[in-house]
Image (cartoon, rainbow, N blue to C red; front, side, top):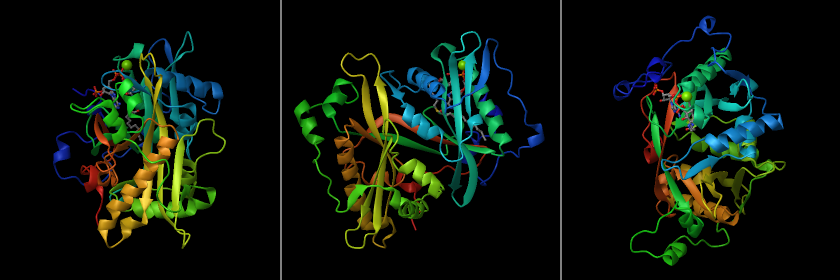
Length: 399
Ligand code: YNC
Ligand code: MG
């Protein structure tokens, strides 16, 4: 099996068990990289999408909304908003050539898509110039025709042409070979709605009323000095986040421009994508903590009453407490920070708050009443060999 992936410069399943020397798997000779896209299947053609054109952003949105990732029982499907796609696909350094589509020649209809954006990663001690590949989708009627490998090879070619020879990507499916695997955890904010959508279930021996009470949150946040992040906070957030992410084995290296793009809520956007908060110490005026989440709705497939579940996904956070000599303070501080994030998300009308088992998340998941979901997220590197990174708490390089 894995007729395609076995031909690619990725770690094989059995190699991952042995000793790994960090570095590229294959040197890429630019002279041997094709200057034109490979031949597309008859009746279809390659297109470079212009996502600055509202109409083409719309087409990409419609394709993803109808055909992107579903859960195993086909009850929910990710519904990335147009604003989200605009944010995720036009980050600093983005290239139009990395927004690749396939159209049916006769109708012009968009039937497949794949994208990449540039990112700078640190994998343990080493910096790796990467692309981050995302939003791979093939129309449901064109599945299992080996179109996905053709799209992956085309985005690879376009990355190579820009001098990028490594990539990072995540997927629910298991292919050769994850560098890390995280589990999704969910914290109900509107338990009753989640129950009606069959997202949440009634635990044996409990009642609806008890579940609602279990997940009830106060209306106001608790941390003194907590407020929305503003333009003037960019440098302080960058500094705090840089130091915090330095304690992890795998992290993105952020520039100031990237912090502004990814973390500062845009004032001009139609639908808000990211929510960001800082804690400013009332005495010293220093930014001591940071927390953020983003909005990603899921379509509830074939439901009479509910169209979407509005999910907040925990995004980046950082706290000075992580650098204290006294590590016992980290757990209570993170719990306080995340509890306030839950309250803010609830007040912003989210139905559920999701988090993965990465960063220091295992320190608060249980106490903040997150439950393990059945979804897993595998992290992959393309053309880069490194020993697997343990998930969850162990992912920290504890000093
Ligand atoms: C997947 N998600 O294993 P083998 S995540 C990677 N990521 O190959 P066919 C995948 N590979 O095993 P279908 C994959 N899903 O035989 C399938 N594959 O070697 C592999 N779903 O192709 C699969 N979006 O065309 C197999 O399958 C081969 O028609 C089979 O198409 C797949 O965005 C897909 O889940 C996923 O739209 C497009 O099912 C389709 O089923 C679909 O016969 C719903 O393909 C949406 C969905 C995926 C979300 C994502 C990350 C993608 C990463 C791609 C890899 C990037 C590598 C780095 C390139 C840059 C390099 C540089 C520099
Ligand atoms: Mg196919």
